[in-house]
Image 1: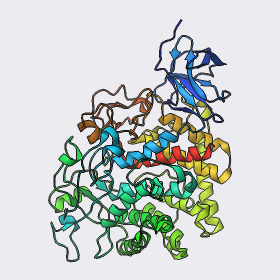
Image 2 (image 1 turned 180 degrees about the horizontal axis):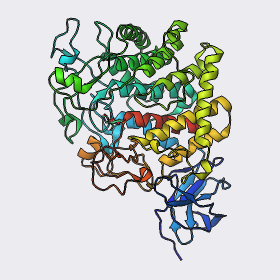
Image 3 (image 1 turned 30 degrees about the horizontal axis):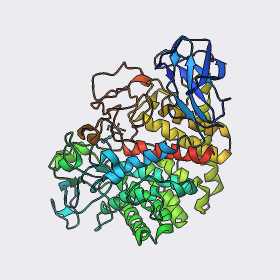
Image 4 (image 1 turned 60 degrees about the horizontal axis):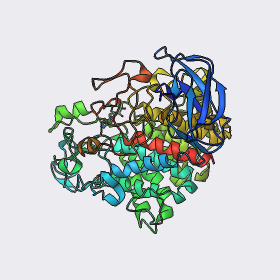
Length: 561
Ligand code: 9MR
Protein backbone atom coordinates (compact mmCIF):
# COMPACT_ATOMS: atom_id res chain seq x y z
CA UNK A 1 0.00 0.00 0.00
CA UNK A 2 1.17 3.53 -0.80
CA UNK A 3 2.66 5.40 2.13
CA UNK A 4 1.64 9.00 2.89
CA UNK A 5 4.17 11.83 2.99
CA UNK A 6 5.02 12.34 6.67
CA UNK A 7 6.25 15.55 8.30
CA UNK A 8 7.72 13.41 11.09
CA UNK A 9 10.63 12.32 8.90
CA UNK A 10 13.23 15.07 9.16
CA UNK A 11 16.25 15.27 6.93
CA UNK A 12 18.32 17.62 4.85
CA UNK A 13 15.69 18.26 2.19
CA UNK A 14 18.29 18.97 -0.47
CA UNK A 15 20.37 15.86 0.02
CA UNK A 16 23.69 14.25 0.76
CA UNK A 17 27.24 13.69 -0.46
CA UNK A 18 28.03 10.20 -1.80
CA UNK A 19 30.90 9.82 0.65
CA UNK A 20 29.31 11.75 3.52
CA UNK A 21 27.20 10.77 6.50
CA UNK A 22 23.46 10.42 5.78
CA UNK A 23 20.92 10.61 8.55
CA UNK A 24 17.17 11.05 8.72
CA UNK A 25 15.38 11.52 12.03
CA UNK A 26 11.92 10.26 12.81
CA UNK A 27 10.19 12.58 15.25
CA UNK A 28 7.66 10.18 16.72
CA UNK A 29 7.55 7.21 19.04
CA UNK A 30 8.01 4.87 16.08
CA UNK A 31 10.55 2.06 16.39
CA UNK A 32 11.57 -0.75 14.09
CA UNK A 33 12.85 -0.56 10.57
CA UNK A 34 13.26 1.93 7.73
CA UNK A 35 13.87 1.66 4.02
CA UNK A 36 15.46 3.89 1.43
CA UNK A 37 13.82 3.62 -1.98
CA UNK A 38 14.69 4.90 -5.40
CA UNK A 39 12.37 7.87 -5.91
CA UNK A 40 11.49 6.92 -9.48
CA UNK A 41 11.31 3.12 -9.55
CA UNK A 42 10.21 2.69 -5.94
CA UNK A 43 12.75 -0.10 -5.60
CA UNK A 44 14.22 -0.58 -2.13
CA UNK A 45 17.95 0.15 -2.17
CA UNK A 46 18.72 -0.06 1.55
CA UNK A 47 17.01 -1.45 4.66
CA UNK A 48 17.98 -0.66 8.22
CA UNK A 49 16.87 -0.49 11.83
CA UNK A 50 16.00 2.77 13.54
CA UNK A 51 18.49 3.70 16.25
CA UNK A 52 17.92 3.91 19.98
CA UNK A 53 15.39 6.36 21.31
CA UNK A 54 16.64 9.93 21.97
CA UNK A 55 14.87 12.69 23.88
CA UNK A 56 14.79 16.42 23.24
CA UNK A 57 15.88 18.24 26.39
CA UNK A 58 13.75 21.15 25.22
CA UNK A 59 10.41 19.43 24.60
CA UNK A 60 10.82 15.93 26.04
CA UNK A 61 9.79 14.56 22.65
CA UNK A 62 11.32 11.38 21.26
CA UNK A 63 13.24 10.72 18.09
CA UNK A 64 15.17 7.91 16.44
CA UNK A 65 17.80 7.96 13.72
CA UNK A 66 17.66 6.29 10.33
CA UNK A 67 21.30 6.09 9.29
CA UNK A 68 21.80 5.28 5.63
CA UNK A 69 25.41 6.43 5.26
CA UNK A 70 26.13 3.09 3.55
CA UNK A 71 24.16 4.23 0.49
CA UNK A 72 26.70 5.97 -1.73
CA UNK A 73 25.23 5.87 -5.20
CA UNK A 74 24.17 9.18 -6.76
CA UNK A 75 20.45 9.35 -7.41
CA UNK A 76 17.09 10.49 -6.15
CA UNK A 77 15.57 8.73 -3.13
CA UNK A 78 12.97 8.72 -0.39
CA UNK A 79 13.09 7.35 3.17
CA UNK A 80 10.11 5.23 4.21
CA UNK A 81 9.23 4.16 7.74
CA UNK A 82 6.46 1.60 8.20
CA UNK A 83 3.62 3.06 10.23
CA UNK A 84 4.97 6.61 9.82
CA UNK A 85 5.11 7.34 6.10
CA UNK A 86 7.63 8.54 3.60
CA UNK A 87 9.88 11.56 3.19
CA UNK A 88 9.91 13.95 0.25
CA UNK A 89 12.45 12.99 -2.43
CA UNK A 90 16.05 14.07 -1.92
CA UNK A 91 19.29 13.52 -3.81
CA UNK A 92 22.70 12.03 -3.35
CA UNK A 93 25.12 14.06 -5.45
CA UNK A 94 28.78 15.06 -5.35
CA UNK A 95 27.88 18.77 -5.55
CA UNK A 96 24.70 18.59 -3.55
CA UNK A 97 25.03 22.00 -1.86
CA UNK A 98 26.33 23.97 -4.81
CA UNK A 99 22.97 25.65 -5.42
CA UNK A 100 22.52 26.38 -1.73
CA UNK A 101 25.92 28.10 -1.67
CA UNK A 102 25.25 30.12 -4.81
CA UNK A 103 21.71 31.10 -3.84
CA UNK A 104 22.67 32.20 -0.34
CA UNK A 105 25.35 34.48 -1.83
CA UNK A 106 22.84 35.70 -4.41
CA UNK A 107 20.64 36.59 -1.44
CA UNK A 108 23.01 39.54 -0.88
CA UNK A 109 22.36 40.81 -4.39
CA UNK A 110 18.65 40.97 -3.59
CA UNK A 111 19.52 43.03 -0.50
CA UNK A 112 21.36 45.71 -2.51
CA UNK A 113 20.35 49.29 -1.85
CA UNK A 114 20.56 52.11 -4.43
CA UNK A 115 20.33 49.95 -7.54
CA UNK A 116 17.67 48.52 -9.80
CA UNK A 117 17.45 44.73 -9.89
CA UNK A 118 16.60 43.96 -13.52
CA UNK A 119 14.83 40.77 -14.53
CA UNK A 120 17.97 39.46 -16.20
CA UNK A 121 19.52 38.97 -12.76
CA UNK A 122 16.57 39.05 -10.39
CA UNK A 123 14.01 37.03 -12.37
CA UNK A 124 10.48 37.50 -11.08
CA UNK A 125 11.85 39.44 -8.10
CA UNK A 126 13.00 42.29 -10.37
CA UNK A 127 12.40 45.69 -8.79
CA UNK A 128 13.26 49.36 -9.25
CA UNK A 129 16.13 50.91 -7.32
CA UNK A 130 15.42 51.98 -3.76
CA UNK A 131 17.16 54.25 -1.31
CA UNK A 132 19.65 56.19 -3.46
CA UNK A 133 21.15 57.49 -0.20
CA UNK A 134 22.94 60.23 -2.08
CA UNK A 135 21.55 62.86 0.30
CA UNK A 136 21.70 61.44 3.78
CA UNK A 137 21.28 63.83 6.68
CA UNK A 138 23.80 64.13 9.48
CA UNK A 139 21.91 63.48 12.69
CA UNK A 140 22.44 65.94 15.52
CA UNK A 141 24.26 63.19 17.45
CA UNK A 142 26.86 62.96 14.70
CA UNK A 143 27.85 66.57 14.23
CA UNK A 144 31.53 67.28 14.75
CA UNK A 145 34.55 69.01 13.35
CA UNK A 146 32.83 71.71 11.41
CA UNK A 147 30.07 69.51 10.06
CA UNK A 148 26.63 70.86 10.71
CA UNK A 149 23.41 69.24 11.68
CA UNK A 150 21.28 68.22 8.72
CA UNK A 151 24.09 68.77 6.26
CA UNK A 152 24.00 65.98 3.72
CA UNK A 153 26.50 63.33 2.75
CA UNK A 154 26.37 60.75 0.00
CA UNK A 155 26.33 57.20 1.31
CA UNK A 156 25.05 55.09 -1.55
CA UNK A 157 25.20 51.32 -2.14
CA UNK A 158 25.46 48.71 0.61
CA UNK A 159 23.05 45.95 1.59
CA UNK A 160 19.84 46.33 3.53
CA UNK A 161 20.56 44.74 6.87
CA UNK A 162 17.62 42.45 7.18
CA UNK A 163 13.87 42.61 6.73
CA UNK A 164 14.20 46.36 7.20
CA UNK A 165 15.94 48.88 4.93
CA UNK A 166 18.57 50.34 7.21
CA UNK A 167 22.32 49.90 6.90
CA UNK A 168 24.16 49.17 10.13
CA UNK A 169 27.95 49.25 10.33
CA UNK A 170 28.25 46.86 13.27
CA UNK A 171 26.24 44.16 11.57
CA UNK A 172 28.00 44.77 8.28
CA UNK A 173 31.24 44.19 10.20
CA UNK A 174 30.75 40.54 11.10
CA UNK A 175 29.02 39.90 7.78
CA UNK A 176 31.92 41.24 5.72
CA UNK A 177 34.48 39.58 7.98
CA UNK A 178 32.77 36.23 7.45
CA UNK A 179 32.56 36.60 3.66
CA UNK A 180 36.13 37.87 3.31
CA UNK A 181 37.34 35.01 5.50
CA UNK A 182 35.49 32.57 3.29
CA UNK A 183 37.43 33.92 0.35
CA UNK A 184 40.76 33.83 2.20
CA UNK A 185 40.10 30.27 3.40
CA UNK A 186 38.85 28.78 0.10
CA UNK A 187 39.94 31.06 -2.77
CA UNK A 188 40.09 28.31 -5.39
CA UNK A 189 36.47 27.35 -4.83
CA UNK A 190 35.29 30.73 -6.10
CA UNK A 191 36.98 30.54 -9.47
CA UNK A 192 33.91 29.10 -11.20
CA UNK A 193 31.18 30.23 -8.85
CA UNK A 194 28.52 32.10 -10.78
CA UNK A 195 25.61 33.87 -9.15
CA UNK A 196 24.37 35.75 -12.24
CA UNK A 197 24.90 39.27 -10.93
CA UNK A 198 25.71 42.29 -13.14
CA UNK A 199 29.43 41.88 -12.38
CA UNK A 200 29.58 38.13 -13.14
CA UNK A 201 32.33 37.20 -15.62
CA UNK A 202 34.30 40.40 -14.97
CA UNK A 203 37.40 38.49 -13.93
CA UNK A 204 36.69 38.87 -10.22
CA UNK A 205 35.02 36.14 -8.17
CA UNK A 206 31.32 36.93 -7.69
CA UNK A 207 31.84 36.64 -3.95
CA UNK A 208 34.20 39.64 -4.06
CA UNK A 209 32.06 41.63 -6.49
CA UNK A 210 29.20 41.27 -4.04
CA UNK A 211 31.41 42.18 -1.08
CA UNK A 212 32.64 45.26 -2.96
CA UNK A 213 29.06 46.56 -3.17
CA UNK A 214 28.93 46.84 0.60
CA UNK A 215 32.60 47.76 1.04
CA UNK A 216 32.17 50.91 -1.02
CA UNK A 217 29.20 51.88 1.09
CA UNK A 218 31.12 51.27 4.30
CA UNK A 219 33.90 53.60 3.10
CA UNK A 220 31.35 56.45 2.92
CA UNK A 221 30.45 55.96 6.58
CA UNK A 222 33.79 57.27 7.81
CA UNK A 223 33.89 60.93 8.76
CA UNK A 224 36.75 62.20 6.56
CA UNK A 225 37.49 64.91 9.09
CA UNK A 226 38.55 62.63 11.92
CA UNK A 227 38.33 58.98 10.87
CA UNK A 228 35.46 58.03 13.18
CA UNK A 229 32.70 55.86 11.73
CA UNK A 230 28.96 56.48 12.00
CA UNK A 231 27.15 53.67 13.79
CA UNK A 232 24.43 53.34 11.16
CA UNK A 233 22.48 54.87 8.33
CA UNK A 234 18.82 54.74 9.15
CA UNK A 235 15.45 56.37 9.05
CA UNK A 236 14.22 57.41 12.47
CA UNK A 237 11.59 54.65 12.56
CA UNK A 238 11.22 51.46 10.56
CA UNK A 239 9.63 51.82 7.12
CA UNK A 240 6.24 50.27 6.50
CA UNK A 241 5.83 47.04 4.55
CA UNK A 242 6.57 48.74 1.23
CA UNK A 243 8.91 48.04 -1.67
CA UNK A 244 12.30 49.80 -1.48
CA UNK A 245 11.44 52.45 -4.10
CA UNK A 246 8.27 53.35 -2.21
CA UNK A 247 10.10 53.88 1.09
CA UNK A 248 11.19 57.49 0.90
CA UNK A 249 11.52 58.72 4.46
CA UNK A 250 14.55 60.87 5.23
CA UNK A 251 17.61 58.98 6.35
CA UNK A 252 20.37 59.89 8.76
CA UNK A 253 23.83 58.87 9.75
CA UNK A 254 24.04 58.84 13.53
CA UNK A 255 26.68 59.06 16.24
CA UNK A 256 30.18 57.76 15.68
CA UNK A 257 31.22 54.97 18.02
CA UNK A 258 34.11 52.69 18.91
CA UNK A 259 32.38 49.41 18.05
CA UNK A 260 31.43 50.62 14.59
CA UNK A 261 34.86 52.16 14.02
CA UNK A 262 36.81 49.06 15.08
CA UNK A 263 34.57 46.71 13.09
CA UNK A 264 35.16 49.03 10.15
CA UNK A 265 38.92 48.96 10.73
CA UNK A 266 38.94 45.16 10.80
CA UNK A 267 36.94 44.92 7.59
CA UNK A 268 39.08 47.52 5.80
CA UNK A 269 42.30 45.76 6.82
CA UNK A 270 41.06 42.38 5.66
CA UNK A 271 39.61 43.89 2.46
CA UNK A 272 43.01 45.40 1.68
CA UNK A 273 44.62 41.96 1.80
CA UNK A 274 41.95 40.49 -0.46
CA UNK A 275 41.42 43.31 -2.95
CA UNK A 276 45.09 44.16 -3.52
CA UNK A 277 45.14 41.10 -5.78
CA UNK A 278 42.37 42.64 -7.89
CA UNK A 279 43.75 46.14 -8.23
CA UNK A 280 43.40 45.96 -12.02
CA UNK A 281 39.64 45.56 -11.59
CA UNK A 282 39.18 47.82 -8.57
CA UNK A 283 41.81 50.53 -9.12
CA UNK A 284 42.76 52.15 -5.86
CA UNK A 285 40.22 50.29 -3.75
CA UNK A 286 42.75 48.39 -1.65
CA UNK A 287 44.71 51.61 -1.02
CA UNK A 288 41.56 53.42 0.05
CA UNK A 289 40.81 50.59 2.45
CA UNK A 290 44.28 50.80 4.01
CA UNK A 291 44.02 54.56 4.48
CA UNK A 292 40.55 54.16 5.97
CA UNK A 293 41.71 51.41 8.33
CA UNK A 294 44.63 53.46 9.63
CA UNK A 295 42.50 56.58 10.13
CA UNK A 296 39.83 54.55 11.89
CA UNK A 297 42.39 52.95 14.19
CA UNK A 298 43.74 56.39 15.12
CA UNK A 299 40.22 57.61 15.94
CA UNK A 300 39.62 54.56 18.11
CA UNK A 301 42.85 55.13 19.99
CA UNK A 302 41.58 58.59 20.90
CA UNK A 303 38.08 57.25 21.66
CA UNK A 304 38.70 53.75 23.04
CA UNK A 305 35.22 53.12 24.41
CA UNK A 306 32.55 55.43 22.98
CA UNK A 307 29.48 53.25 23.23
CA UNK A 308 26.38 53.57 21.09
CA UNK A 309 23.52 53.90 23.54
CA UNK A 310 20.38 54.71 21.57
CA UNK A 311 18.23 55.58 24.58
CA UNK A 312 20.82 58.04 25.86
CA UNK A 313 21.21 59.50 22.38
CA UNK A 314 17.46 60.02 22.12
CA UNK A 315 17.43 61.91 25.40
CA UNK A 316 19.88 64.44 23.96
CA UNK A 317 19.13 64.67 20.26
CA UNK A 318 16.23 64.85 17.83
CA UNK A 319 14.73 63.17 16.00
CA UNK A 320 14.45 60.03 18.10
CA UNK A 321 15.85 56.96 16.38
CA UNK A 322 14.12 53.69 17.23
CA UNK A 323 15.49 51.27 14.63
CA UNK A 324 17.84 48.35 15.36
CA UNK A 325 20.26 49.54 18.03
CA UNK A 326 23.14 47.08 17.75
CA UNK A 327 24.38 48.60 20.99
CA UNK A 328 27.15 46.81 22.84
CA UNK A 329 28.34 46.72 26.41
CA UNK A 330 31.99 45.96 25.77
CA UNK A 331 34.37 46.75 22.94
CA UNK A 332 37.20 44.49 24.16
CA UNK A 333 36.35 41.97 21.47
CA UNK A 334 36.21 44.64 18.73
CA UNK A 335 39.69 45.74 19.81
CA UNK A 336 40.97 42.16 19.50
CA UNK A 337 39.45 41.74 16.06
CA UNK A 338 40.72 45.08 14.72
CA UNK A 339 44.19 44.55 16.20
CA UNK A 340 44.43 41.07 14.68
CA UNK A 341 43.46 42.33 11.23
CA UNK A 342 45.84 45.32 11.44
CA UNK A 343 48.62 42.97 12.51
CA UNK A 344 47.85 40.58 9.64
CA UNK A 345 47.86 43.53 7.25
CA UNK A 346 51.05 45.22 8.41
CA UNK A 347 53.02 42.56 10.25
CA UNK A 348 53.55 45.07 13.06
CA UNK A 349 53.49 43.34 16.44
CA UNK A 350 52.61 46.61 18.18
CA UNK A 351 48.97 46.21 17.18
CA UNK A 352 48.62 42.96 19.09
CA UNK A 353 50.64 44.28 22.01
CA UNK A 354 48.09 47.02 22.57
CA UNK A 355 45.23 44.65 23.37
CA UNK A 356 44.50 41.92 25.87
CA UNK A 357 44.05 38.91 23.57
CA UNK A 358 42.08 37.03 26.27
CA UNK A 359 43.96 33.87 25.40
CA UNK A 360 43.09 31.99 28.56
CA UNK A 361 39.37 32.56 28.21
CA UNK A 362 36.90 30.10 26.71
CA UNK A 363 36.14 30.22 23.00
CA UNK A 364 33.34 32.64 22.09
CA UNK A 365 31.17 31.90 19.08
CA UNK A 366 31.01 34.97 16.81
CA UNK A 367 27.93 37.19 16.91
CA UNK A 368 27.61 40.84 15.92
CA UNK A 369 28.42 41.83 19.51
CA UNK A 370 31.24 39.31 20.07
CA UNK A 371 33.79 39.42 17.28
CA UNK A 372 37.15 38.51 18.83
CA UNK A 373 37.07 35.04 17.30
CA UNK A 374 37.08 36.59 13.82
CA UNK A 375 40.48 37.96 14.82
CA UNK A 376 41.61 34.54 16.09
CA UNK A 377 40.56 32.91 12.83
CA UNK A 378 42.73 35.41 10.99
CA UNK A 379 45.70 34.81 13.29
CA UNK A 380 45.39 31.07 12.66
CA UNK A 381 45.01 31.41 8.91
CA UNK A 382 48.17 29.81 7.51
CA UNK A 383 48.31 31.72 4.25
CA UNK A 384 48.47 35.12 5.88
CA UNK A 385 52.27 34.76 5.97
CA UNK A 386 52.68 36.75 9.14
CA UNK A 387 54.19 34.87 12.02
CA UNK A 388 52.47 35.01 15.37
CA UNK A 389 54.16 33.87 18.54
CA UNK A 390 53.86 30.09 18.96
CA UNK A 391 52.30 30.50 22.41
CA UNK A 392 49.59 32.74 20.96
CA UNK A 393 48.88 30.26 18.21
CA UNK A 394 48.81 27.37 20.68
CA UNK A 395 46.42 29.15 23.02
CA UNK A 396 43.99 30.01 20.22
CA UNK A 397 44.11 26.47 18.89
CA UNK A 398 43.43 25.15 22.36
CA UNK A 399 40.38 27.41 22.74
CA UNK A 400 39.02 26.28 19.41
CA UNK A 401 39.62 22.55 19.83
CA UNK A 402 38.30 22.54 23.39
CA UNK A 403 35.14 24.21 22.11
CA UNK A 404 34.79 21.85 19.14
CA UNK A 405 35.28 18.78 21.35
CA UNK A 406 32.72 20.16 23.78
CA UNK A 407 30.24 20.49 20.93
CA UNK A 408 30.89 16.91 19.86
CA UNK A 409 30.56 15.37 23.31
CA UNK A 410 27.27 13.47 23.59
CA UNK A 411 26.42 14.02 19.94
CA UNK A 412 24.99 10.48 20.03
CA UNK A 413 22.36 11.60 22.52
CA UNK A 414 21.14 14.64 20.62
CA UNK A 415 17.61 14.26 19.23
CA UNK A 416 18.55 15.49 15.74
CA UNK A 417 22.14 14.27 15.89
CA UNK A 418 23.45 17.81 15.57
CA UNK A 419 25.73 19.83 17.83
CA UNK A 420 23.25 22.67 17.27
CA UNK A 421 20.76 22.83 20.10
CA UNK A 422 22.83 20.99 22.69
CA UNK A 423 22.89 24.15 24.77
CA UNK A 424 19.61 25.90 25.49
CA UNK A 425 21.18 29.26 24.63
CA UNK A 426 21.77 28.09 21.05
CA UNK A 427 18.14 29.03 20.46
CA UNK A 428 18.65 32.76 20.68
CA UNK A 429 17.37 35.40 18.25
CA UNK A 430 18.87 34.34 14.92
CA UNK A 431 19.54 30.76 16.07
CA UNK A 432 20.15 29.74 12.46
CA UNK A 433 23.33 31.83 12.59
CA UNK A 434 24.41 29.98 15.73
CA UNK A 435 24.15 26.71 13.81
CA UNK A 436 26.06 28.18 10.87
CA UNK A 437 28.77 29.77 13.03
CA UNK A 438 29.25 26.53 14.98
CA UNK A 439 29.75 24.95 11.58
CA UNK A 440 32.47 27.48 10.74
CA UNK A 441 34.22 26.83 14.06
CA UNK A 442 34.11 23.09 13.34
CA UNK A 443 35.51 23.66 9.85
CA UNK A 444 38.38 25.63 11.37
CA UNK A 445 38.99 22.70 13.73
CA UNK A 446 38.91 20.36 10.74
CA UNK A 447 41.45 22.47 8.83
CA UNK A 448 43.78 22.46 11.81
CA UNK A 449 43.53 18.78 12.70
CA UNK A 450 42.34 17.10 9.48
CA UNK A 451 40.05 15.05 11.73
CA UNK A 452 36.87 14.26 9.80
CA UNK A 453 34.69 14.18 12.89
CA UNK A 454 34.72 17.98 12.86
CA UNK A 455 33.92 18.14 9.15
CA UNK A 456 30.99 15.77 9.55
CA UNK A 457 29.62 17.68 12.54
CA UNK A 458 29.78 20.88 10.48
CA UNK A 459 27.82 19.09 7.78
CA UNK A 460 25.33 18.03 10.45
CA UNK A 461 24.63 21.69 11.16
CA UNK A 462 23.97 22.32 7.48
CA UNK A 463 21.61 19.33 7.61
CA UNK A 464 19.95 21.05 10.57
CA UNK A 465 19.44 24.29 8.61
CA UNK A 466 18.08 22.46 5.59
CA UNK A 467 15.51 20.40 7.46
CA UNK A 468 16.87 18.02 10.09
CA UNK A 469 15.46 19.94 13.01
CA UNK A 470 12.55 20.00 15.43
CA UNK A 471 10.46 22.33 13.24
CA UNK A 472 10.80 20.30 10.04
CA UNK A 473 11.47 23.48 8.04
CA UNK A 474 14.25 24.07 5.59
CA UNK A 475 15.27 27.58 6.74
CA UNK A 476 16.63 28.83 3.41
CA UNK A 477 13.98 30.53 1.27
CA UNK A 478 13.43 28.96 -2.12
CA UNK A 479 14.71 25.57 -0.98
CA UNK A 480 13.32 22.38 0.51
CA UNK A 481 10.10 20.42 0.55
CA UNK A 482 8.83 22.20 3.68
CA UNK A 483 9.64 25.80 2.86
CA UNK A 484 9.70 29.12 4.63
CA UNK A 485 7.14 31.14 2.65
CA UNK A 486 6.49 34.21 4.81
CA UNK A 487 9.74 35.69 6.13
CA UNK A 488 9.68 39.06 7.85
CA UNK A 489 11.25 40.74 4.83
CA UNK A 490 9.72 43.85 3.33
CA UNK A 491 10.26 43.08 -0.38
CA UNK A 492 8.96 39.52 0.07
CA UNK A 493 5.86 40.91 1.75
CA UNK A 494 5.23 43.87 -0.56
CA UNK A 495 6.07 42.49 -4.02
CA UNK A 496 2.82 40.61 -4.58
CA UNK A 497 4.77 37.48 -5.60
CA UNK A 498 3.84 34.27 -3.84
CA UNK A 499 7.40 32.99 -3.44
CA UNK A 500 9.62 34.95 -1.07
CA UNK A 501 12.90 36.37 -2.37
CA UNK A 502 15.14 33.29 -2.57
CA UNK A 503 18.44 32.53 -0.87
CA UNK A 504 17.63 34.17 2.46
CA UNK A 505 18.14 32.38 5.76
CA UNK A 506 15.31 32.63 8.26
CA UNK A 507 16.35 33.46 11.83
CA UNK A 508 15.03 30.19 13.25
CA UNK A 509 13.61 29.03 16.59
CA UNK A 510 13.70 31.63 19.35
CA UNK A 511 11.73 30.96 22.53
CA UNK A 512 11.98 34.67 23.40
CA UNK A 513 9.04 35.23 21.01
CA UNK A 514 9.64 38.99 21.36
CA UNK A 515 7.37 39.74 18.39
CA UNK A 516 4.33 38.32 20.24
CA UNK A 517 3.21 37.06 16.86
CA UNK A 518 0.29 34.61 16.90
CA UNK A 519 0.92 31.08 15.69
CA UNK A 520 3.98 29.84 17.55
CA UNK A 521 3.34 26.13 18.14
CA UNK A 522 4.58 26.26 21.76
CA UNK A 523 7.45 27.63 23.84
CA UNK A 524 9.85 24.71 23.45
CA UNK A 525 13.19 26.25 22.47
CA UNK A 526 13.76 23.95 19.49
CA UNK A 527 10.24 24.40 18.09
CA UNK A 528 9.65 28.08 18.83
CA UNK A 529 9.34 29.18 15.22
CA UNK A 530 6.47 30.46 13.11
CA UNK A 531 6.49 30.98 9.35
CA UNK A 532 4.56 34.23 9.51
CA UNK A 533 5.78 37.66 8.42
CA UNK A 534 4.86 39.19 11.77
CA UNK A 535 7.53 37.04 13.40
CA UNK A 536 10.61 39.21 13.29
CA UNK A 537 12.01 37.31 16.28
CA UNK A 538 11.93 33.87 14.59
CA UNK A 539 11.38 34.43 10.88
CA UNK A 540 13.30 37.53 9.83
CA UNK A 541 16.30 37.35 7.57
CA UNK A 542 19.59 39.20 8.15
CA UNK A 543 22.93 39.62 6.40
CA UNK A 544 24.84 38.39 9.44
CA UNK A 545 22.86 35.14 9.32
CA UNK A 546 23.20 34.65 5.57
CA UNK A 547 26.97 35.16 5.57
CA UNK A 548 27.83 32.16 7.78
CA UNK A 549 25.46 30.03 5.71
CA UNK A 550 27.32 31.03 2.54
CA UNK A 551 30.54 30.13 4.35
CA UNK A 552 29.26 26.79 5.64
CA UNK A 553 27.73 25.62 2.36
CA UNK A 554 30.65 26.76 0.17
CA UNK A 555 33.33 25.46 2.55
CA UNK A 556 31.59 22.08 2.76
CA UNK A 557 31.34 21.94 -1.02
CA UNK A 558 35.06 22.64 -1.20
CA UNK A 559 35.90 20.12 1.54
CA UNK A 560 33.63 17.17 0.72
CA UNK A 561 35.02 16.62 -2.79
O1 9MR B 1 20.20 40.11 15.40
C1 9MR B 1 19.80 41.01 16.41
C2 9MR B 1 19.62 40.23 17.71
O2 9MR B 1 20.86 39.71 18.14
C3 9MR B 1 19.02 41.12 18.77
O3 9MR B 1 18.74 40.35 19.92
C4 9MR B 1 17.76 41.79 18.22
C5 9MR B 1 17.13 42.74 19.22
O4 9MR B 1 17.94 43.84 19.47
O5 9MR B 1 18.06 42.53 17.05
C6 9MR B 1 18.53 41.73 16.02
O6 9MR B 1 18.87 42.54 14.92
C7 9MR B 1 17.85 43.18 14.23
C8 9MR B 1 18.27 44.63 14.12
O7 9MR B 1 18.26 45.23 15.36
C9 9MR B 1 17.42 45.40 13.12
N1 9MR B 1 17.37 44.77 11.84
C10 9MR B 1 16.85 43.41 11.95
C11 9MR B 1 17.75 42.57 12.83
C12 9MR B 1 17.33 41.12 12.84
O8 9MR B 1 16.14 40.91 13.55
